[in-house]
Image 1 (cartoon, one colour):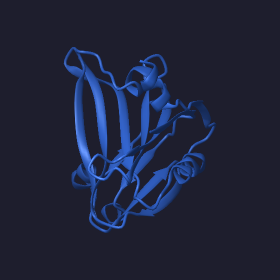
Image 2 (cartoon, one colour):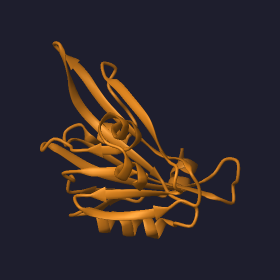
Image 3 (spheres, helix red, strand yellow):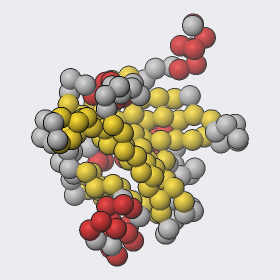
Image 4 (spheres, one colour):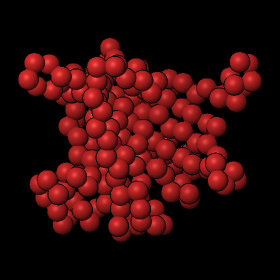
Length: 180
C-alpha cells in the first residue's frame, strides 16, 4: 500500500462529476448528481493519495484521491477518518453515465476518461446542530481513479489543480504494520 498526504491552499470552489451533468442539468437535479462545494474562507485543505491492491483482484490496484476541507484546528481529525459523536454525516455517491468525469478547481479543469460508467467517487458533508440551525464542520470528496492512471498521475493532478502543495507524509504502511 502506498499513501501520501499533502497540505495545500484551500480551493475557493471544487467541482467533480460527469461533464454531461454539468451541461444538461441545473438546480436540485444537478446538486444531487455532482460535487460543487465552496468551502468557507476559514477552511483549510489536505489531500490524501492512496494506492492499494484490490481485494477481489490482488494484482490490480485501487487508487483514490480524497480531498478534506475543514477548519485548520480540526482538519486532521477528518484526515484520520474520525468524527465527533455529536456530528451528522450526509453522504452521496458520484456516478457517471458517459465513461468520464470532470474535475474543476478554481477554474482549472481536467476531463478524465474512466473506461466505464458507474460510481467513481463520493462526497461527505459533516455538520453539527446549534440551536435551530446546522453548522458545517467538514467536507470530503473521494475520487476513484481509472486503472490506467497510476500513482504518479495522481500526484501530477494534485500539482495541476492546487496551489501551495506540500508533501507532509509518505508512510511505508507495510513496514508500520510489521512493527505492531
